[in-house]
Image (tube, rainbow, N blue to C red):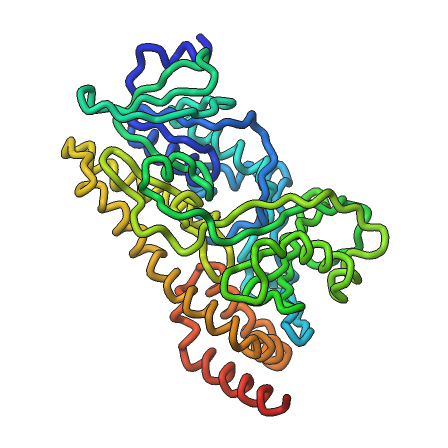
Length: 420
């Protein structure tokens, strides 16, 4: 029986649109509960995805549970980040080996075309049905039947019926916006390209570059397991540059930035620019009657770092927790599903508010980035690890205000400001 034939006369508990980390995590955790789940994606897998391809310890928890991380490691398709650091706006560089200091890795680089397919297969193993190349045309809720009707552009794909609909269809989220749950378009943007293995001379595993007035945005380089390097350029609202400047900045960094030019070398083969929108900071409402929004579609991306992978996975699990209670009570009203919003706000949404405040500070006073780089050179890798844990979401942003981190940073920033 084909996948399309299997949806005929099947009434699903949950239909999830979008098979990225948020959608696949939702499918995995819901299927594990025994729910009838169908996961849809308009693309054929494996497929390329514009992303930094770097997964934090918080994301690794989910990948470990799903069996995905062990597969990635066994197949040598992930590169554990050990040697890394940053370049500050004044060009102060700090690179060190954090893994040697703490005995474990904060990040692992995995190409999304590999990772996303493995996550989908993990959800399938738990019983979720995955339909690729299912391009959703419209979703309609039937009050009489108390269910969603999901239709594809291609009528041959068949109509899907489900009690709950989850939109995990990316930052633009045509579904959530068509239902007027998510109101605004994405406000940030990033690029992501691969630099071919064997053509570059990049020696580190992961470095963030804040130079050329891009702060609070940044450029990042991550080395992949196959030797390719992922190059990303993030424009985050609050700084000098706007989304329309992205193409110009992307090429200027590759052609003129001192650190990047030296790191990549003269023979680097770089693929043409690819870009994607980002919705930052979390939407005010990610739920409605019989409906949830997960991942990038819900703006579950850190405004300070542009990181969304770990939060999408967290949200997938939290959506499953909220829906488990809703199914138990047979109550799928917006009032009932508001619990999902409360769960993710408690888990990471409130931290996004601190990130937003920090973006404003760094946009006005990039000297704090210079001070941090200077302090790392003075105090060593232990100081960098404190910063890295906060920036990667292992610790809340308020940890920046702990005296051990904040006092030296403030003093050094004041000293640097006075010297200008």
